[in-house]
Length: 319
Image (cartoon, rainbow, N blue to C red; front, side):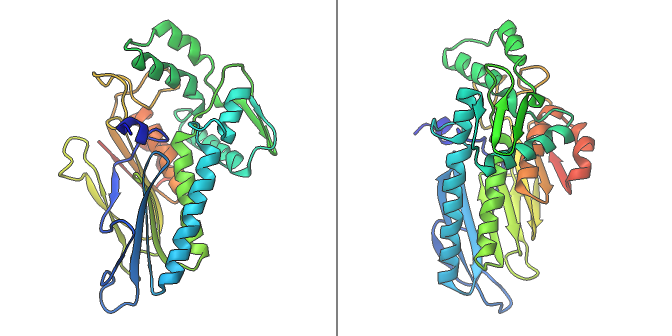
């Protein structure tokens, strides 16, 4: 499998949760005599590595919770990815209309609208026709034609997507959606919710840097997260403490389509080309969906975007 194929659902973020491995019980991770052991498991999903970690005195409860969270991942990715022709999103993109849309799709569209408004249009999932053309041009070994980019930009505009109940409609022929910048965060939130519903009090979900945490690693002991430095992978930009909340990172250094790295997986809806104002943005917020979408938008907005999204986040780290 090519590295680019592994990362296809969504660009891998740069935040990595520290201190756990693959499918293993770890004894002694909770200090000061607190009861509990950590169960961690890592799988491929959403085009990246997804890791779950829970601390619980009951191995059977922890295993049941992880199973429930993995089931959420399988179910929601199958509905929301644009890379499977049988998904609800692919059906919408193919036909321009979807009746009987799953509730999760319309929930993610609601989240996309929030991010679109909060970022003054910098987050817009209707950029897919532009992004797809850039990818196709790169695969053919040629630069995108500016006139064609401008033509495709006429298909961009979230206000042209309408939904009422479970019916979703794209107003213009040729429009298509990518939910890459919000769906992964939404799925991470739902996986964390599944862990809590099974009685787990301390957990963390990390999907390639989209992270949701709850309860800390123990009472009074936060989960520790290192934010990758695009210029030096050995020296993190920051080390974050997460007890209850989420963070996400978006960067221009993981997925790009040309040798010069002029075209990457983020597209500015206003210009139809990839922005180069910053290399990475990390956002801390109350949900992974919000952190995911706003971090994506910051790649478009650049440093001044920090003031734009400030009312909706707790911290921003740019590089």
